[in-house]
Amino acid sequence: METGSSERGRVRILLSLPEVVSLDVAAGVLGPSLFVVHLVSSGPPSWPTQVALVCAVLAVYNLDHLLDSFRPDSESTARRRRYAENRRSLGAVGLLAFVVGAAMLPFLPRIVVLYGLALAAYQTLYFLALRLGMSGVAKRCAAAVGWAAGACIPGWISASPDQRGLVLTVFVLLANIAWINLQSYALVDDSVEGGGGSLPGTRLRAIAQATMVVGLATACGRFPGLAGSWFVFAILAVVQTILVKLPRDFVHPVGEWSLALLGLVRFLG
Image (cartoon, rainbow, N blue to C red; front, side):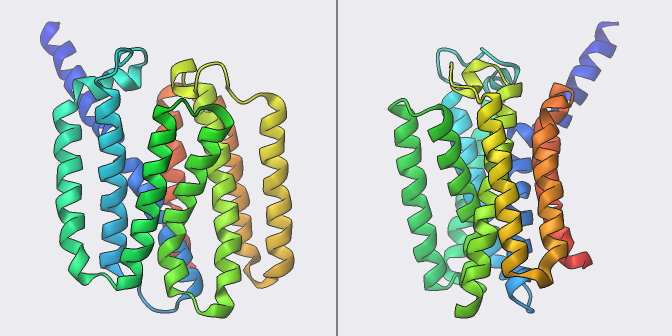
């Protein structure tokens, strides 16, 4: 019986490892990034840029989770217990991502490096604000903006001047989707993960959803030829909203991998 239980435990660890080391988060950024690039460019995406983006996400998230694993309350939730139990994996993946990302630098256009440095500065300020106590609405909005910016930078660089308005529209929609996503995560996770006593209430959830509706209506009005893409964004927003109804173990995987699938839309369409 003990052997069977041990084997099941190892299987659960293997199944949860992609989430622990943030592979799902990286995929959730890569998918929208590919979507935006294909939206504004008929050519193939710049793979060094996309690899650097994925590596940046993995390095930042694994470092953040590694630091979390050493906090006094590191075992306050199941997810943080997994971080504490997998410190070596977090450190190894984070270090590997940093090395591979650094190896991409010679292949990146200067403009990509500059935007990357600007985003890194934003993330530094974000983490500093977290250490100073930022939480709740401010934390989730700041995280959503940073996530959407990272996903849109490759597309922004690929876009012609007359396409920049389209990229900005996508940025606003992605930031709103990320805001809804983070609200759902906060409601499902306990108060530590959600920022103490500042969990999103019904009114705030309604504001996020109404903002998404207004954003989609504006996008359809400005770019009616992309109605199919806006419909996909609406479906994504609904998925992120109903995450709270899913079994807890499915919330984060569904939330991240549904965003990752956005990268297939342009390939299939």
